[in-house]
Amino acid sequence: MPIMLAIMIKATLWQIPGSHPCEAVHTAMTMKGMEVKTVNLLPVMHKPVQRVMFGQATVPGVVFPGERVVGSRRIMQRLDQLVPEPPLFPADPAARLKVEEAETWGDDVLQAAVRRLLWTVARHDPKTVLTALADPETLPIPLPIAMAGANQIVWGETKIHGVTDETARTDLSALKGLLDEVDCLISEGVIGGETPNAADLQILSSIKLLSAVGDFRPLLEGRPSVALADRVFPKSSGQVPAGVLPADELALLS
Image (cartoon, rainbow, N blue to C red; front, side, top):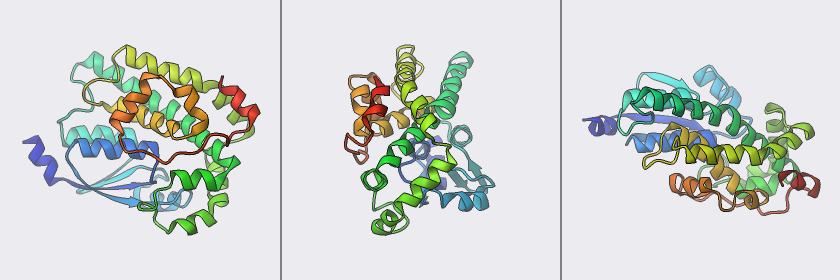
């Protein structure tokens, strides 16, 4: 019955292509067997569109039959209500609490830091970064037009997310500790099970995005989170070549 119900549910995901919380939600919807249509938005320009559609200027947003839900955590909760199998949260209350706490950390802390780190890298070479990570098939406008506005997109996103020289130094210095925290969650069994839970999706989507940036790969090599991210998100992202970050910022990663 749950599988039949899932097939009947059609939903539209409003997203920025390549956004890690959007990837997390899209994967969750696919796991549930939903029929998913995507509406792809440009960074910065997504703000007014999302505010009109969902009352909030963030992605992802999902239009289910008869309702609209915005925000990856709220969407995950609603998905489990609509289609219980496979579950994104454990039935056991204690286990569920651990997953919810990890999901919140993955959303509020890890995803936010990775988002700022991506735009930190992009500040140094907007066209290289956006060309490497952009998928021409999912861009709402032709790639050459998007690239013509790359500097403006990166400037806007750095302003939106408060990316400065100071936040860049803080995030780069903190990255190793964040990755260690992910490894601890794996060793404790909170994430990394046979079927991905909500915390897996929120956290591993960030690891997948980090692994696409050459300057971060040495810090990621050999970590169990990378193998898990590749398993849960097998589609390869574009690859940003190493050498975009200047030497003084690279040194903060060690």
